[in-house]
Length: 206
Image 1 (cartoon, rainbow, N blue to C red):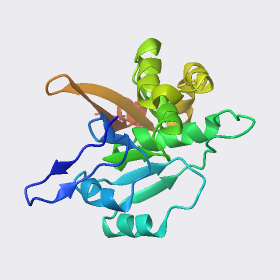
Image 2 (spheres, rainbow, N blue to C red):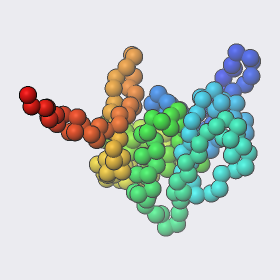
Image 3 (cartoon, one colour):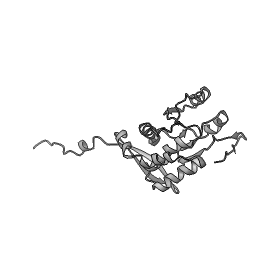
Image 4 (cartoon, helix red, strand yellow):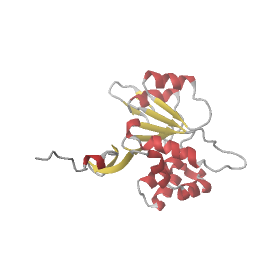
């Protein structure tokens, strides 16, 4: 994906992070944001960032998050290792739980290049969205480019999205269509007292 440069109304040059794209309305993905990307990120009104690397977040990035009231969720997934290590399912599941919660949106997902670790998380999201597997894997390969990894495809294919429901407890997530060809992730609090509300009420005798 080529780097985009956008001029805003004030004539300021806005430079998105490398490999930046929109996943869904309110969900974005990219490579690691640099100083020159901060002005662009400010236009997204982000509430949260999911960071998928084990290394500490740079001080200048932390200052940007603090000044814009952006919450950081870090999930330390190792990148390229020798020998290759599989993606940690539990860690991806935890990151996915943060990702599907619209209270964290707008949200940006990134690792270093925005390809493999980010691609695996987005692929798992697509499975939650009931995308057909071929489309999920095609999107991963397109974003990863020539360096796509077979083990990442296998991880996405084998990832059990039913485990997500076990982590959500009382929150139900639903996809509702809106606008023109758009889909938005909504959540509803589960009505845990529903049965009580429908119980017959005792009435006083005459």
